[in-house]
Length: 440
Ligand code: UGA
Image 1 (spheres, rainbow, N blue to C red):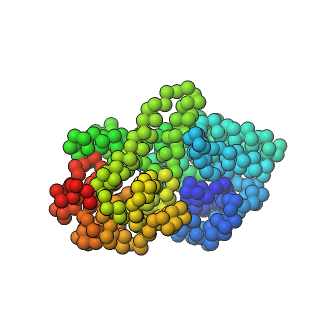
Image 2 (image 1 turned 135 degrees about the vertical axis):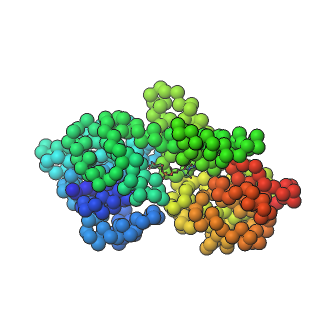
Image 3 (image 1 turned 45 degrees about the vertical axis):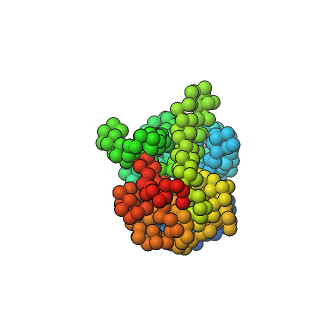
């Protein structure tokens, strides 16, 4: 099959590369020359484990091609995926202008015969129908076009694995031809097939992300109860999660959810709800708890660390990505800078992205230990594997005061106590030897 992806973000580029690896010919259309040049050379621009190798392999085999020219890609394509950004507008609703602009552009190039067009971008209910209307207006008479919603459920950091092994492949369309085409395309991919109507498929994506955000906020809410009562959130959630109706997965408390999807999609769902006159206070509560998780954690630091030199490990919104969109680290760093703290940071992948924003306002280290010297506390914001079994003795030696704030609960409090750390995590008893209790 010949396929076109318009857009080369996480979803577009990863899915395009995986489909090329199955032997399809895949065009990727972008509009920034510098980025297209890098992609053509095998540089995926984003950091995603395994993507560079897979991209280079398929470039060599001439199965994946990058262009800014719609007239090269669209006329020979059987399937066109729109995978451009749908960033939030000021009010939170998804900005669909790029989707509609692209629809108009691509529609003019659709070949005679059947072409399927599908939004891979996360779009509110009704968007694919609007895309269809645009396509039908601009396409040539001989071109037959149908739309389908085929949402993506990949996570950054494990995007290739998720694309190959989804729990489900959702296909929503009123056109049998469109459904058959997408079933054929997904043939090598595992996962339960869910065939449904367009509106349901579009809503499935928002519902999934809102449910994931709800689980995280629920875990964080319970962590607030634990901190006030002396309970241990990990024990509570472990026990609760044994109930198969609830489950323990995706209920790790911490400094809140970030990234380009969960925050954006929950807010967009609130906006959709408001436009439909639905009470959205439940979803607003999810967002509110997320903000509280960040501010509660920050307040712990502000209350304890009086000598304003700190070190931070982890800037990306989650491990195995250099993506810093809506990362909790932003919130914390901005708060601490405002209060006059001097900050040294280390992250295995996201420092270049952070440098573009903060420049010299914060210092960047080359390795985890390098940022610790003379710092009054270490703050952990992302649970990268390389932080999980560090040399605690060495950390204690390097830090001016043995104080750790762990926003991802990666260490055992008992172990930290034995090493003599003041240790503040999320929803678990603070370990605070008397000598540090009056501020460090
Ligand atoms: C999310 C969804 O998980 C994917 O299924 C979806 O396809 C994707 O959005 C999308 O819409 O494109 P992603 O944003 O890559 O994927 O990251 P997640 O793994 O969902 O993590 C989001 C945030 O939640 C991170 O900041 C993470 O640290 C946080 N999180 C996650 C927690 O705080 N606790 C948890 O238990 C899990």
